[in-house]
Image 1: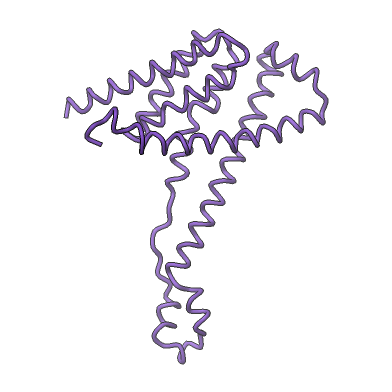
Image 2: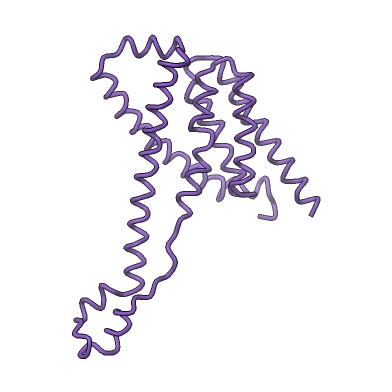
Length: 221
């Protein structure tokens, strides 16, 4: 038991160190304000798969605090803490939501007593538990996608509002003052397209790790 816990701590420390290093090195240039947090946060996929979201969240918190005090590019550190550092954990949580199998009484009755209930065969098929489950899971997937985009837009707008009106970051102020309202709206649309690609990137990286890289680091998996 203690060996397992020690190994978890060791792996979490290694991943956290790599994540913090990416933030530290990437934060040296303004161009890495987004790339460094994205790459740094993606490393937590390893912890999510191997040890669960709790350990990944612990590592995220450590890297977020460390980055805030050590990374030169303050915008990159804030972007990591505000979204990209924990998004793989949030994504894993949302996409793990599934509906339990459901039995519909009307469907069961119609299957054996169609003349008594007056329910047609087509209605019986529509009330089929498997079909109902598929419909509900599809609905959940749509809701999950909406939650992702709503949260991303909320964080995006809140972050830059805070950076402009409260923190007064010079880099953000110069950008916003050179843009008009139409360009800011275009920027918001472009940010959502970027988020779509980023979410897809995390999905592909997760599959790459599970099927191509995992066995190289964990022989017993």
